[in-house]
Length: 134
Image (cartoon, one colour):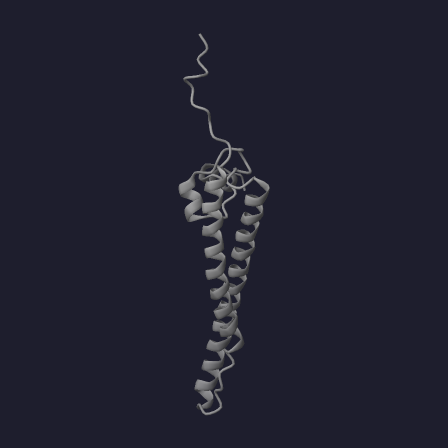
């Protein structure tokens, strides 16, 4: 007797409906990330506060503080740009049918992980294993 009927078929891809759900989630995250990036860029551009009316000692401290704040905002903006790039790459994977497939194992990345990290390219186990190899 053939046992293949009783063995559940392992899912290897998400359905078009599931992909549409992920696409919507990613588009929402991109919109929010772009707003956040714009605010960071405005903060970087607008951090040239005028300190002409402050005493020289405080002026030096304030200028140093402004430089640190500007550098931090620039780092945050760079991270946000990378996040947006990663989300857009996830949209491309949705379009070409490879979204949700672990690059290391070929297994399906669990929905729960993709809902939290929609640009994930590996299962948690594969990601942890790749970190250990470094």
